[in-house]
Length: 351
Image (cartoon, rainbow, N blue to C red; front, side, top):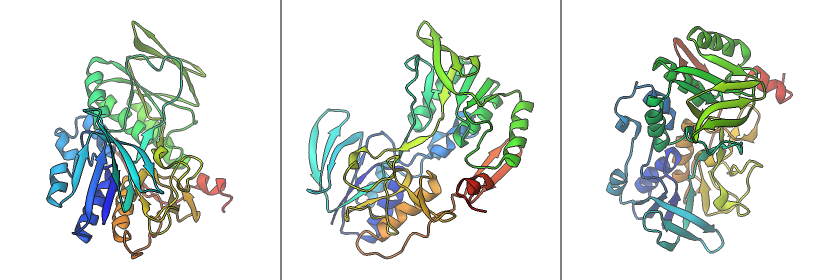
């Protein structure tokens, strides 16, 4: 059995390790366009804040470890096309530019997600960064050394954690979000209000209910974030607006949600029988509503990747769905959430 895996973070690593252990005769080939695998992106803020001193602690696998399991890992290789009918891939070596074809019996799509990048005037200015992978985190750390005023756009988990990390490093921090409160997708107002108060007590400027319209700069470097309500002076901007699934390769070949998240059945199988998917590239079965939803979380990704391997040859263990459980620590508050918020229930028409 020839297994091809595209992408190797949480879901990919779990799928590869389990596939290698369950099917020792399988020929497993991994294609990863980055120069590292298994990066714990949920640890970026701890790394930026200096809590994690050694970045090695943010990785839990490597091409060498996978090689011990008989897996061939092609780093800095980008899959440019997938044909599910002929079961072929087109691949480009990003270092040499060499292109070649490969075939598979089973394809595992663990391509993850990518930050949403708005088309805004001034976006090309130096000092506007994304926060997703290891390279991003190193760039943030490097650029933050020279910055005094830092603006974070997006008050989801990553944005909120970065704000705390920058403030603890002695920076002047502004947090901008289009909603009227932080973490609005994850928590109800009675939980977010105390965190907002805590931010303000630490001197963080909250610019809520403000939509970013453009960026202005001087000598090619960003100096201002312009919003629907005014301007914020800045030396550095980190965009944390959210993520969208990285699924262009399978567009028109498998069933997807409108946002591009791949729909899988209980056995992690896509609508194309020999193509499996897991992690942030997928929609999941959300138990509180009984519907497919897009909830990118590392815990989901690992569980789904593990199930891909278990179900690759025969349907063995069904996915039990998820409640979207997550946790976060902000200053002295430890906050955990699972299931629907009250606001989420109202939006679903549930009592």
